[in-house]
Amino acid sequence: MNTNHQERARHLQAEELEALAIPGDHRLPARSSAHAAECDRCRRDVEELQTLHVLLQALTPLQPVVGFTDRVMQRVRLPLPWRVRVLQAVRKHQVATAAAFAGAAAAVGVGLVWIARYPELTPMTIAALLVQRSTTLMWSGVMEVGRFVYGSGIVETAQGVAGQLTLVTAFVAVATVTLIGLASLRIMLSLMDVDPALVTSHWQLRRRVRG
Amino acid sequence: MSYKEHSDQDLVRLCLKTDERAARELVERFERPVFSLVYRMVRDRELAEDLTQEVFVRTFNNLQRYDRSYKFSSWLFKIAYNLTVDHLRKKQVKTISMHGSPDAVTPERQQATSLSLESDEESPDAMVEARELAGYLEDAIARLRPEYRTAILLRHVEGRPYEEIADIMGVPLGTVKTYIFRARRELRDLLEDRWDGGDEE
Image 1: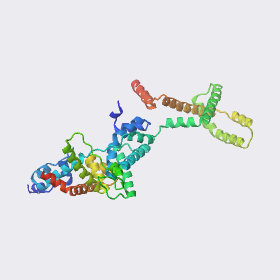
Image 2 (image 1 turned 180 degrees about the horizontal axis):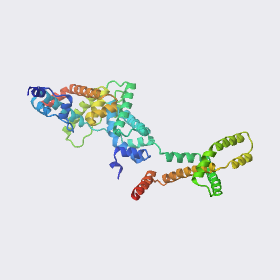
Image 3 (image 1 turned 135 degrees about the horizontal axis):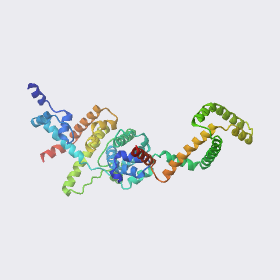
Image 4 (image 1 turned 120 degrees about the vertical axis):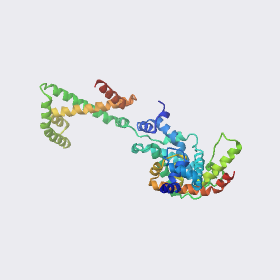
């Protein structure tokens, strides 16, 4: 009883004053309102804080001059999505991009012809060949580059490359073209103003419906 | 769904996809509160507009660094606060008055930099009284230290919680409480005459 009386007699703390003065979702201890009702000093503090809050709330929100938004927007550079950056790079380096596409297409063509020559190949044999020949291919590549650099002539180099053409080369070419194809698809989607995320979510939705 | 109905986070997401209309909506949504805060810090309309413009430019240029677990408005106010305080430190702005920038040397410049208060709904007498009172209050706020000023404006004008203010100002929660407590006490002292006069009426 005595402790309760002492607790109630204690003047309000800053948080309690604010909870009483400013409407909001404050959790107000029951003793706070009881104390404020009895204590002149705390009641005056609450009233003062209330007045100050009302005055500050009533301050006119200031407005920048007309046309401010336009001026800001002229200076703002929004971050570009990766597909737009790719598109810009493609536009900037058109010759290099065309050369890369042509090279990839040629590699795919050669690879497909090569695969067609071995209809008996299964995925397992392909994998085994990949492991077996990757080291050889790497060194062959180095040798071919070296030969090219030392001026052995374009024809000789081409002959050398053709001589080293393996399943691995074909696989790498197919993978490269697949990646280029996917990138092209994204660029096309962006050109058509289609959000790739929507396409992805559409596929996910279809998968879920099927599941 | 119109852009006005989007949440701040949605608009940020659209901005990251280079949606200019989303960026425009964010600017329109926050230009008044940011400008108000910056203006009340520097008390020069032209300068406040330049700084506010810079706040938005920096915000959008660094949008990829924005941590979406925080409120966008907190991040924006944080940039505004840092930029304004940096400016005040560099320029060491001294006396501040509701009648215009301390740097204003001509009457035109004073007019351009002075605070304009708008009210369409009140009677002429009430308008004058409200304008006068608001003027005293603006003047009193201008006399506070920049830290106190920011804290009390964010708390009472923008209605931000203490934790958010601490985050915006980059100081501990206890410091924000102290700033706000002292700012209130100083405002009360600065407005004492008006306060007592108001009580008598």
